[in-house]
Length: 221
Image (cartoon, rainbow, N blue to C red; front, top):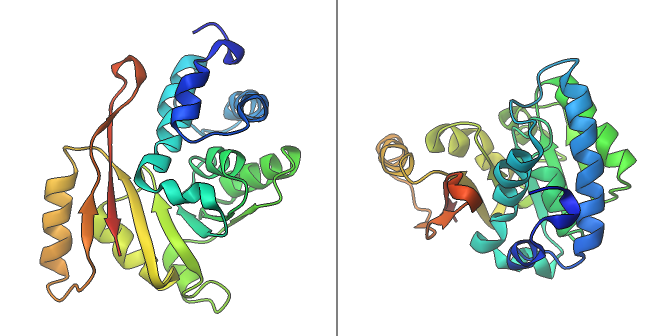
């Protein structure tokens, strides 16, 4: 891969992106800012452009495979532990007719996310310097979200316990996982929550380009 502009557009289209030129242009800005900010404090260990695209952007967009309704819009989506804004920012750019809220307790990272939101003119998202469990106790966030997601943050039991107060009735938790982590974490979740009445589904396995890894989604609803 030589540049963003040469990145396979078919792959972005397969991930549900409609306005591909706009997506590439905004991700280009996001990448450059992330690399520059990373010199000041640790935001990500992935700074190579090709790795960034595959392991951050394309991986984030695989959410579309688990929840294609994201293209329909009108959803409120909470991203738990957003870090440097991933998957929040890629999703907000690609599927702009939803509203996204990042919950990231580290204020330096929240500050970076909000700076990027402003720079990229994203009117559909905001970052809050709160843990999910703290946000769930606040009236403005309690049972307010249609979808809760998280990527590379914590185990299923911890994610479920800390974010369940954020979820609307009939909402969904859709968590990014790798295939090898699902069986032990799912077992732990069911052991800790013996009276769990939610349904749980597991998506098929998606393989990232260049054999960069495998992705599955656990949906709790």
